[in-house]
Length: 440
Ligand code: CA
Ligand code: CA
Image 1 (cartoon, rainbow, N blue to C red):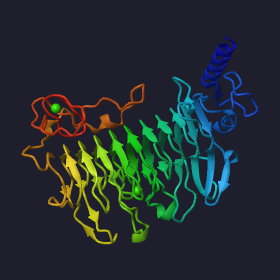
Image 2: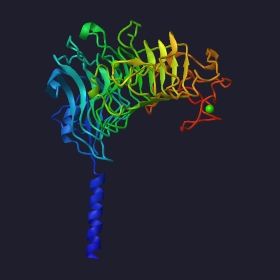
Image 3: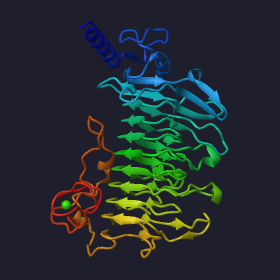
Image 4: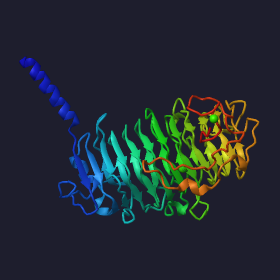
């Protein structure tokens, strides 16, 4: 009996430990000398990290956080890390840094101008969940080749959710290492490095994913990238496959006044720049781009970028990009460009490319059935309920999901409905439709 009671007690004790998590608060009018309660909140996320443990939540109250150089948590080499998140949660017990429900915190870095690269949030911890706040005004101060970043990820099993990185000179989100990270419902827009290298803005992508060997299962879902001076999404240099799904890219490579800036691809899916052959990954990863939308990007909507392999392109829609689909590949010498080989393309849809609908595709060396450019369908304006681009930058829904749009949504009588083929995702009607929205 005693043994049973002792066992029960230790079980309950373990349960209590498991569910015992604390809540802290950060607020604009807080102080890092406070205990971090709702009435006496901290002033900074950095301070809150000192006290949190796995499973704890830090609520960030709404308002404008004017960040200062005195808050830089760590300077190391070429970097200034303003907020340095290196404490990890555990499986099933993430550390949460969340906007307080119903409020919107904005972290403004306009006054943070060290003579280094600026990383607003450095995240080397794992099992961290960041949610619901904005990062604005991150600066580039150096004149030579450089870049700043709103978020730089090295940890694993992290979730970046409902974050908005905008009106700065920095890349929105940048992964250099880590596995099983989810970037969900995030927006990166109006980001332009007008300072370095003569102000060409050549590194400022909305989202970048450049993990090393073994950094697997990183997924970008339902994100938006628009008016970033370089590309919307870029996974040049990733050594493992990256998945982009339900993501949108508009107007990249342009300023909001449509001044031509840098590369300007919607989705730059791979490639290895000038990397030497012995420094290439082996095997070369296949990236996946599915149910995505690319609109009016300066260069290509969907771009294979000299990748040394094919990728998987499913149910994407492209409209009015320079080239809608550019499948350019490269041989293993990482020098010789060739028409795209090894691609698998299904159910893709394009309309009104400014230059070419499809370019640099080796149709004999790729698996490309059931796309608008292979089927006997006619794509016309009257196939769509709307081509009103303003819909695409509408506010998100309360839960952070993408706004409902009629943009490129098919009309009932369109021949593009049920024109696709089953590739293992849910669909309505007889068969999948072409493009990023399944209509009926
Ligand atoms: Ca880029
Ligand atoms: Ca259908």
